[in-house]
Image 1 (cartoon, rainbow, N blue to C red):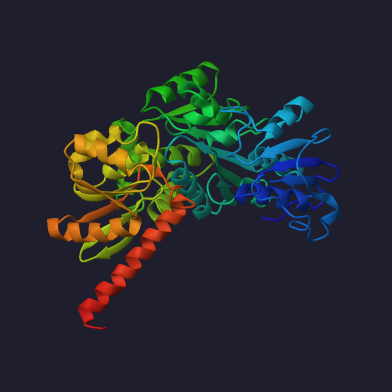
Image 2: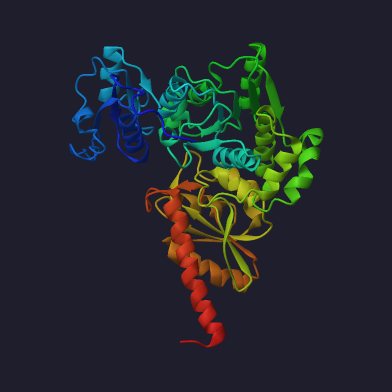
Length: 459
């Protein structure tokens, strides 16, 4: 792995709007590659010296984007719309000037090819399971000693990844927002895990959302491999479209005994991959890894040694024999369903900003919930659904109150698991699902210390 050439984009001008984690990484990377960059953020405008280092001052302009004539591309941070529900004014300027609106994954692809590397790309998308599948595939490749860099929607921004050699593989998690802004990006293997309603405010309809996800297969040829989970109707439809186009497609179903048989033994020895949903993640990663040249022995080794991701069904603490599971990443009902299916009896902590439909889809699993503690803005909405189905529940507002109450109730009722799987976004109370999960861990660490002092009689 090495840095990109410092003159790779010399003479090229890029506009960047939005300077959060993704946008700031884009600006830094483009400047390091010799480009001229004008950047702006409506909420936190940059200063002229924010990126002026290593001799970049003459090539960086901190100013509102009012005229995009002459720019090679506009890179919008993923959360800024260029189409629905209404395009940002700068996106309209780009359209008027004939300047493409691109994601940083597209710029990464161009940079890799311009630098002369033949490194392959593996793209991962779907409504749920993207992060685990991305991390699992990258782990398999790393264990097999393949040069690998993983990022995108997960962790490191795409354009902050290093330059890989010809035999390397970029594993990129792609959101629907990123996929709408690809142009020449070409994946050697790409997957669509599943499709359930999400981000409909951004895409308008389920059809619009599915259309955005379909871009993960753009520019692929029959020599490449598309992997599709076919346990839902929208994915089945996309699979048939790709097959009709002559692409090479592997279909994955957790309900297919022949497919599952070969991987089930390895998953029994993979504690970080519990539940049926992780079976799908593993099957997809296996298919992609095979296409990238890994043997079944290498794949099995990767499955068994996979350490898991933070905030995805991670054991956060064990207090008085009760396991506290941190699944803060579950920001919608479909993701929470995967966690609920893993446990027979739980105290459930949920709430935040509910997605369309709330938690009604989880009703078949409500009999697993001994009691629910609800937090955040939409706690009343969740409580109404639970009470309609006769589930004991209580609104407690904060995560700390919910955690402390859950411990006491679990001990009183003999329930072995407290599950934080909110089924809601976190932004009403936390900066991110990571911040929510970290706060949960901190609360538990304090409770654990109190419990330890009580056992030893320490003050």
